[in-house]
Image 1 (tube, one colour):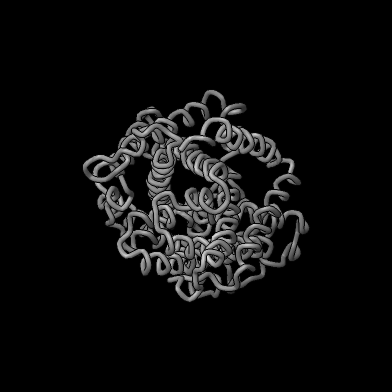
Image 2: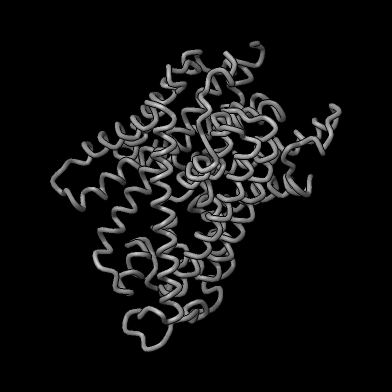
Length: 455
C-alpha cells in the first residue's frame, strides 16, 4: 500500500511546531542548565548554546529541502537509504528508534519520582504504568487527538519558559526585587569568577550538551508524511520552531547566568526554582513540579510518535515484518507503537536492575544517536542536490532551497564529526563512542548480510 493512501494527513503547521518543541524542550533546560553554568560559566554556556543553535539551524535547512521535495513518514531514514546507502538508512532508523525508546524508560521513572512529591505513598511502578497507558492512548486512537494533546502540552512548556524569561529579565534590571538586593543585579555574575572560569575545555564539553539540548527539532521531518500541504507547512514550521527555540533557550541561559551565582548552580534543584523563589513567587516548588511533569509527558508523547514511525518505515522497506507497516482504521501504526512502548518498559527495567551495564550501554548509544542522525541528514542533502542536478533537475524548480549549498551540508557533516571527536576527548562521555561505533558497524553489517540481496 502506498504511503499517501495509508497515512491520514491531519497535521498542520502549528502541530509540526509543537511536536518539534515537545521533543526539544525537556528536563535539560529546566534542570541541567544550572549544571552547565557551574561547569562552563555563564558566558561559556551562552557560547555553547549559540553554537548548538547554529548547528541545528543548518540541519533544519538541509532537512527542509529534503522534506519539501519528498515528504514521507520515513524522513531522514528514507533519505539516507536513497541518497547514501540502504544500510546507512537502516542504521539511522534503529539509532533514532533507540534514542526515543530509551528516553521513554527514563521519562516514566522520572515522572513517578515527581508524582511522589504529592503522593508519597503510591508505588513508583503504578505511576509508570498509568503514564505509559496515558501516552499510548494519546497515540493510538487517532492522529488528531495526538496532535492536539501535544499542542497543548508544548504550549504550556513554551508559556512557562516565556514567563520565566520575562520575570528573570525584570529582576535583572531591577524592576522586580531580587532577594534583598538594594540595586539591580544586571550582569555582574557573568564575569565575577572570570569570563571562562574553568577554561575553554569546559566550553567544548558544554557544546556537546547544547547540541543534545536541541535534539528533537528534526521530528518535523518525520511528521511531514502526515501533514496537510507540506510545501507550505514544513518551511513555516521549521522557521518558527527555530526562532522560538533560540529565543527561549538563549534567553533563559542569560537569565540563569545573570541571577544564579556559579557556585550555587548544579543539579540539586532546578535553577528556575531558586530564581523564582528569590523573586518571591509563591508555591514555586509545586508549580515547577507540575511544569516538569507536563514537560516529560510531552517529550514522551513526541518520542513514542517518532519511534513508531521509524519502525513503520523499516517495515515499509522490507527490513522488518510486514505487520509493522499495517495501520489501523485510523491510519496509525499500532504494532510500532506497541513495540516501542515495550522497548520503553525494557529500558525502564534496565535502568533499575542493570543500570551499570545494559542501561549504560543503551543511554550511551542513544546519547550519540541524534548527532549521527544529523550527520546523516547533512550527508543525504549533499548527495541529493548532486543527484538532482545530475538527473536534469533545475534548482529553481525546488520548492524549498537550502541556501549556500554545498557549504551548509558540509558544515553539518563537519560539526557533527567534531562533536563526536569531542566526546572521545571527554573521559565521562567516551564510553558512549566506544559502544556507539561497534553498534553502528553491527547494524550495517547485519543489513548487508541479511537484506542486501532482498528485493
